[in-house]
Length: 189
Image 1 (cartoon, rainbow, N blue to C red):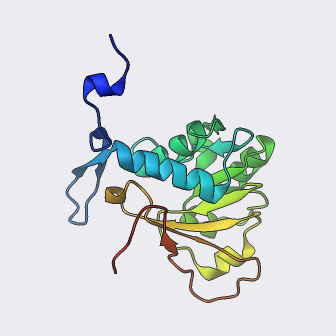
Image 2: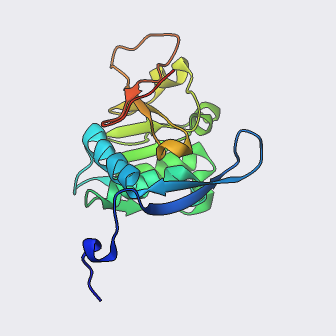
């Protein structure tokens, strides 16, 4: 068995994984994600969010969601620790906040709905809180206790993330921007 990828004929265009989405029509569809997209996503995240071997990343998304790939790639691709909380901890913002603090989580990707509904969000991540899955409200951005708050957007077909926007410390806008394309990509509106 020769582990050399060239011997197997693997290229960046080959399939890395397939993940199913609900699709805009409500009918599930399989999205084929290529190796090149996975590698680009990992390198972009590690650079944008400052993930390194001393980082502690929480795996919030279940394996059925594309964000789970984002979290795993970000952690394992940088040598960071990947933390897997029990499902019941991910359902309530106060319990999740306690878990994130007790585990000294540095990077968390969370859906805004979880945080908008919750009252007790004293701690979410010491280095970067990435909001994804839906547009966060400006009021939420202003009240979040994180070192860096990032809005991330992207359909599954773009290998999870297409754009990011890092919130400045003095943000007082009424609309949260979608951001700019991640490295090596373009977006067309």
